[in-house]
Length: 205
Image 1 (cartoon, rainbow, N blue to C red):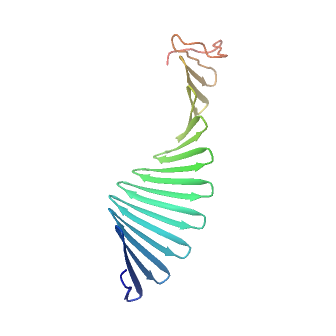
Image 2 (image 1 turned 120 degrees about the horizontal axis):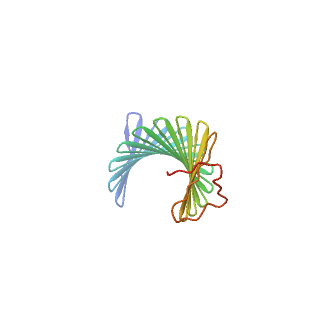
Image 3 (image 1 turned 180 degrees about the horizontal axis):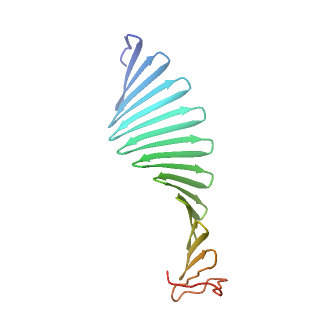
């Protein structure tokens, strides 16, 4: 063990252990720990009420801060930043990439992903057996749910709603507008359960 070295206003302690070196510096109100291991450096600083951990690895930096009840993990990689915060019962992941932000929260039984891109927001929630995607664009909302064997697409636009469901052997497209409903079954497919085209307009899609 290397004897402590005193410098103006702080103390440095360097300890050599198998395969790495630890440097601990105590400054007014905080402690810094720097550990050099194969290919990376770890810096831990303790300040009033939180702990900061910064690790430099090939092409990125990791910053972990522990505050009352949660943990923040910020990683800087080529062209984006990742922030992970752990709070009671869920995890938040925020990634900033060119022109958008991704927010991923894990709660009991599902995952939520929110991406903000020019003019819209995407929310993806994974629940037992299906995935929901909600995108808000100028004047409408899109909801896509994947369940065993089919996909549902619902878009709300001024004055109508479109629902598209894909099931084994057929596709159903139902659009409700101020005066009509359209239902289309793919060639050779079975009719949609309860489908009734009377009084509706049927055309190719």
